Length: 265
Image (tube, rainbow, N blue to C red; front, top):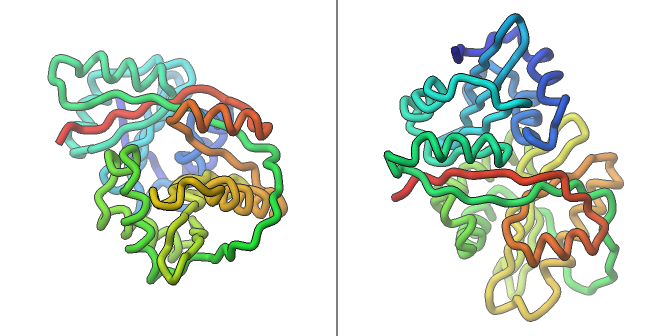
């Protein structure tokens, strides 16, 4: 049975996720930063004989789910997702696939999959382009650029993403880096979560008119190498197989697959 996590459980929950952090990087960083009882996130746990079976975290209209062995109450979890009006659910692919199969008759969600990479190193490049730290007032333009990409557009609205990016800047959970051409942002990448010397990079998008150049590789190299110099363990989530092959060629380690359920609109 799922129940609300209590404030005093924060350390124990983090230790549980740490047992296989690649299946719950976002959960770990958010709970590390916000705790389990805050206005930003809501956390539920399921346990048996004093041991956790599952952790679920709501952030805006999305939910992250973590479990080590996937032995948990499926019906209760689906009920929670319905009650909280969740638009996107993500976690380890096996777990998300089980949820998808359980609700398949209702047909409310579409299933997609991707890859989790741990980036130990990334080639450094010399370049003339100016890479800038994005400011809060840039986030609307950043959100508009990010949502040009179909994968991101299926998960966010522009206004919703803008607010999340702004909130991450306000609370020190994320940084955005941009390249401009004549004042217009034409390339973007960000840390979508940072905490306990762990960072997740995402939002890598180059405007279609500029994709015949190397802006994507340059801005990603810049951010990842900066994070590594600051002592961060860096993770990223990838959908496109072409990009996955590029990361592997750059020396990134494939940690596993993740799954995502997006509510049909």
